[in-house]
Image (cartoon, rainbow, N blue to C red):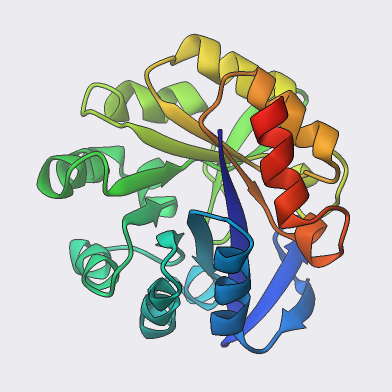
Length: 244
């Protein structure tokens, strides 16, 4: 399982939100390039980057800065505010390996199916972020501010036949709270769609959370606040995944 350290960018700073609420933004660094270099030095191979300014405004705002992070030597997947094929091209041209498509994947999966054909399934990640309402997943859009009224099957029924390979799911109710990941959800996703490389996001607080996620068989896990608040080190996390 790949560990993805997370850098969330808000107006150039590295921040973390709780449950996607911009009012809860906590700044951890004003030097994202140094943070990326630290992760690279700690043994990470990938970096997960979110343009929160772009997610908030509905159009990418920090593509140039995200491109600079690729100078760390890390492979980067990045998103936030992507709405057009031009947005995707701009990120890929800047050095990003995978573009993360959130709202468009949920609202217009047919469009994203065409992007999968245009850019290739290894260059895109569908971010199917959700809130559980009475136990049922409700996909959310626009920086997690709007309910789509759709469930996972509504979107996957279009994207899977189109060749979707990488998908990221955040249980928004757990994001940034260090409350533990929803391992049952990821186990269900892996069992239902075994050919997709699923990535988990939200809630990781301790090394045992990473071991539990690896046990589900998913391909990757994203962690941010737990690293920034020294719940464990990157070195410890990578060692945990090797031993699990």
